[in-house]
Length: 306
Ligand SMILES: [Zn+2]
Image (cartoon, rainbow, N blue to C red; front, top):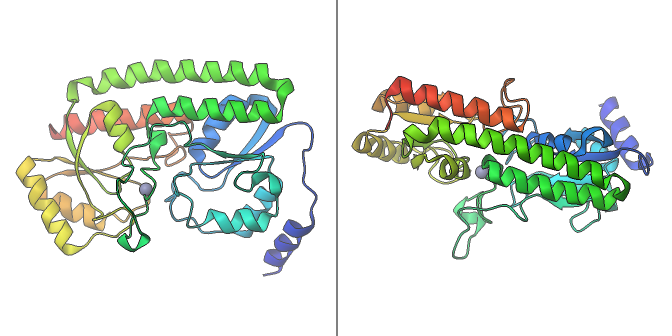
């Protein structure tokens, strides 16, 4: 409790740091942090709020997050309402004008990314949908990764014009790494194009579209809604009908229902991290895809999934 009060007081009274020198960058997720580090190099310090092994829709707000935001020059968010359940009060309580939406240091990384599943009609929260502005897991397409990096480089240059050449070189280096990786990942998965899978949450549509997976259903009846017995039975029936051999789950979901589905269908349940830092092998953006693609290829070979 003492510590909590101290943190609150510190948040209220400390002076914004780093008016000069390194840009103090805060990102909502480790994926954005990883990209920001590549682009910013030694000219920035970067901290993520949510850990890669957490569900980014539901993050427990802590006083330490307010402190981070209070000192930030730049805040990069995934946007598309991914963080709507926890971020707005933290930004507000930081009282840092720079990182308020529309502020000079605020960057919504989704602005130039290719966004899937944008709802056609009116969407209400009563539907229980946590994706009202299209699918916010767009960083799982490496082409979007490059677009995110470009926007971050532009924002950094805007705030530190003297370092523009550095950011642009870092951006080009990052894009080259991603391009080389993408060639590798596409080649590795090319023989398995159209492989049918089920995923827990709608975390992987961008990934599936890029790499040719066919997602035929979800463990969740709707994004953000826990599995129900009827939906699970329907899903099992559909998986049997289509002979689906793989259930992909994010590390932060309960494996009870996926395991039951696996037993009911003979499918393998594979934990596929959707974020940098989800497991120790996914330390940066390129490593995330290297890890996930290898995991998938191994699982497809093992199960004979088609
Ligand atoms: Zn989601």
